[in-house]
Amino acid sequence: MMKNKKLKLNDLVTPFTNGIIKNNATFRLVLGTCPTLAVTTLAMNGIGMGLAVTFVLVFSNAIVSALRNFIPRKVRIPAYILIIATFSTIVEMVTRAFLPDLYSKLGLFIPLIVVNCILLARVESFASLNRVLPSVMDGLGIGLGFTMSITLMGIIREFIGAGTFFGMPINALINADLPMVIFILPAGGFMVFGFMLVIFNTIVEKIENLRGKSK
Image 1 (cartoon, rainbow, N blue to C red):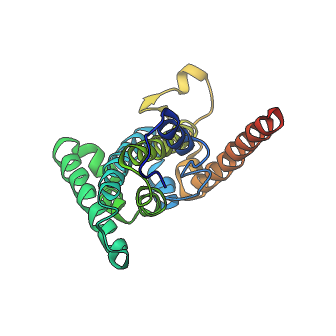
Image 2: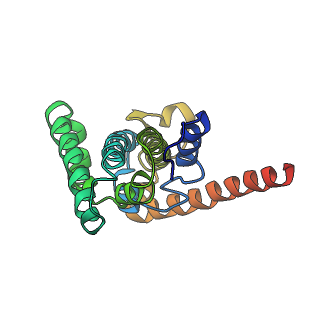
């Protein structure tokens, strides 16, 4: 818990980098799996969903951290959900008003950000115990890690399953027999998720082992 001491640069950098790699919500913590599998049929969906979650994460973390000493412990979970719901509603209203195409593609998963376990996990395990700036950096790191992960999944599934890259046809460019429709179906989502889970964790563990040996 960072209390009554001056913040150092490492106090801000570490939560950010850990959120992207070590505590990656998709491939390390395995949180938010439902939207991960549902919206990654297109790369653009991954970006839209990821940025929406990042916005809610950053501001929810900031508010929870700022009020952590005032929220009674017995009602902390309802209070956290209320804060998350407020920013989720803002995202839903803005997306519906200014990005109707994206809103129609993401459907129910934008209002359902409020019950995304990534949000509650971070405000409970980090923001409620730390100061505002580190909590903001944690939210930003976790959000960007989630965005990059589901966008990469979207790129792979869209490329193989629909033969497009961010909506642009690529069959003629690579002269390949695409699409393989299974990759934009639920079964394909689970396959891509499983392979990426193994690859990401293997790489991270090897990096951590190398760092451990160098110390």
